[in-house]
Length: 224
Length: 253
Image (cartoon, one colour):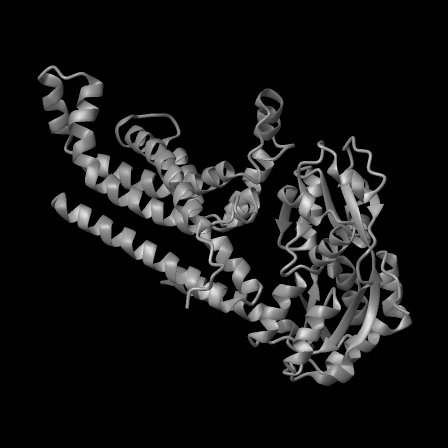
């Protein structure tokens, strides 16, 4: 059943890209979620709306923004190239950026509501007992919000694994370099290679089910 | 309550407006990406001459369009950028062989972004170290990529340059990469270079590949064969050919 030329490189690349993207989205999402849940900052509702945009915008719109910003002639892209000789287009790092932005709202949204659900009295109690702000965050807020953040992170990972549109525009579809599972499926279908497409689709589905199952288990262990 | 009613009416209106044009008969034409501009213009001329018909275009790489037709997409006319794609559909009896006609000819060129400081006088010059990224259509599905592969193989350069290739999903994506300066060089049709205008420059005309001749045919499953034939007749007529000539296509012998 498995053809001899079946190449698993897209699977490893997908997992690598999704892991880095989720890690980036996790740090940014938790930070921003905490900021918007606990601090009174100017333009909070606008910031919230803008951070949720990747969830609702078509991936092609994001892809276009990213090309315009990161491309060789883009604002950030030209600066990166002139200062460091780095070009992100057609690289797996470019795919990481696209996936991270697409999955950021999932972490951010769940982190924000998880932090908002933490009883402020508990945080204040820690403060009266002499804990620093960092201590309050690390020992009280974060552990209490953790299950919600974890759930958002798992969804973000699954979303990053399936990312297609923005990634295709930024990183292209280069076999062995930036060809992720979703790209490989697209190529196989376009070339009429239904057998390969079926195998890739089954691999993708199994990996995603495993991740969702594992995250469900993890959440149960945490008592929710 | 009143607001809800107004909202419902607005929604209904949005769905009904397209029906104002319901009187005209619609045909769907799937055409190779490289035909985008010329075919759109030809379609407009055709609609002007035949106000009772509305042409809906579906542009993508010929390979992708072939897959759609194989899987039963409701298409009436298919125009491919190569003979091989059409041959495959003909072998599956998905197009009507007696309606198949060659309608335009094209050439493959090597192009670069307008501001590139490259000297390329022969295909051999592609080996220079300054050229790190060469864009071409994915040869599996994009005819322009297939012609590029055939040509480079002919010059003995395909394997040498392999790690510099950036595969695109259609020849128009190669053009976009060139315009944005994301690649150093790329293979497009001379007609795409016309669309690119002064944002790109043509370095070389490529040889050692089959002549690039586009066939057009009616799709077997089409329920609108007469209307489809009127369209293909127009494309082959002098009026239709004049539009294609405007975009740099030539007439096949």
